[in-house]
Length: 346
Image 1 (tube, helix red, strand yellow):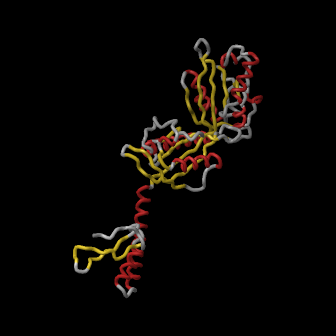
Image 2 (cartoon, helix red, strand yellow):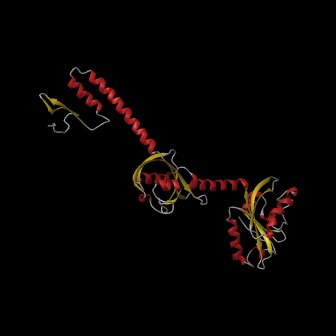
Image 3 (spheres, one colour):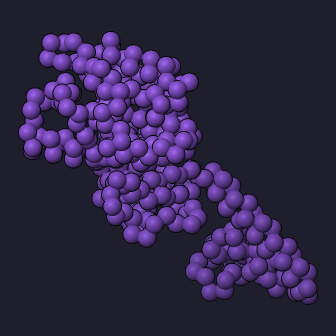
């Protein structure tokens, strides 16, 4: 974006006689702005018009600077009175005002912009003009939505949201994540993950490093970790999603860190494991009963039943019987698997 002066008005809107260096610096600053910017002196004569303003509306600086007001070129005649009243009306105020107004492009199209206007005052405190920064409304709305989404995620989300910087240190986290990590939002900032995650931190840091190097993964991952909480160490299962963050202002992608979102699945996973264990045990008991019924020798059937039923219940089993003639003495009859250690009971 560039800045262009208008004879007799630079004193009101900038330093008195800034000189070549000051003028070049001002032009460079305005050229670097992402928002369209224009400025008017006290007589509503346009004094500055940067490149973003030229891009949005199509009017070059040579065509814009020096014009009085916006009517007939940047605003349709029928809209001019209302638009200029809202934009130039800020001259009497020292604050800022925001308006949505319809401007006119060089090829005759109307474009809705969100304009922020502010009064410029001279050394004597008298109004010397205004400046107006504007952008297309849909661009502004996109920005506001992005900001609102970020704030909502870090304030109201029902799952953990963490921003990890490029050094894998905690930069921002929401209340849900702080609770899950057993810390507070303020004390966690700047700390490495190893201070909070006791086990599983290697897998977590590996996933974050992979995202920084190769980009966002295509699917969530499930990680088992152990964290220290007020109730002691707890093992948790988190379903994690990762998003690589890059600066939108850099010419080349520069990683700012990783957005890490996670949801606690511990109870669901524990229930799932328990159900799987019960299904396996039931299946083994069914097999044990079938095999035992095929044995003619009851002792052989009992051992076969132990061999099949043991899995899922214990590492090994011992079978003792009452010794003949001595109801208080037991004899070791079998062990499953065979050869398991254990002394015969007395």
